[in-house]
Length: 327
Image (tube, rainbow, N blue to C red; front, side, top):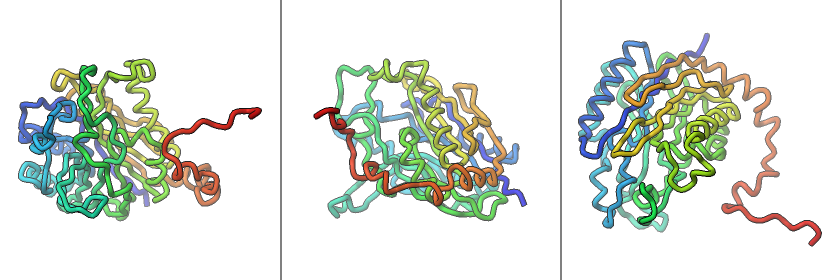
């Protein structure tokens, strides 16, 4: 019997700094209504889906940014999403800013801040949580930058690893699902850790600007979407998995986000792509049995991986210069 799941990337247009969570959540509920009308069984929303991308705004006192965060989930603002999931029988992925009261690396109990995503079952039960590992940007204000990127200031590095869960979703009795967030997609190690858990569907949200303020030569404007899609397509192909990659898009707080949400199959092919800068629902029927071919042939890890040759991957962080020939 075919294992078929109908998924949707629920791209969001811009959310301005002055707009409340109720505005964004209302838009998200309407996208879930449209998803239900199309027979969708799982909806993926973007990173930090309920607010503007607040790390572009500097606060000297970081506690002043706490109003962007949720301390419980479901929170008061997100109850309508959980109700819609139950009403329509649809699972969903939600990215948000999380405050957690838990020990840090030293064992000290404190308020910790994470860029987080959760996977919610159609029943409203939270199945899986992920916290962003690869935080880009910088921690201190940089006056030379026209736009700040302060994820390292406002978030702790994720401490949950890259978990995968096998759970029912839609009409599929057991589906291997994992998550990543935004910049994680650019790191092949993240994809491989998920692949080593036989992931079949990766959900990821992003808020990516159209212009890289610091590296216009390495990542020029015309390469931004290409690099994003390249990372996702390669990750899917090399780990024989589907992915739903959902963006925020349009001009937010005066700065453009490039959108281009996509759904990718295990051959690395884009099977659906958003074409607007606003709220847009793109869908695809995922035949999960397509994951089998890659992972039983060219990417049969048990037969072909050679971890004894990969030591540098976990033993070394920064790049080092190689030996100089002749010395």
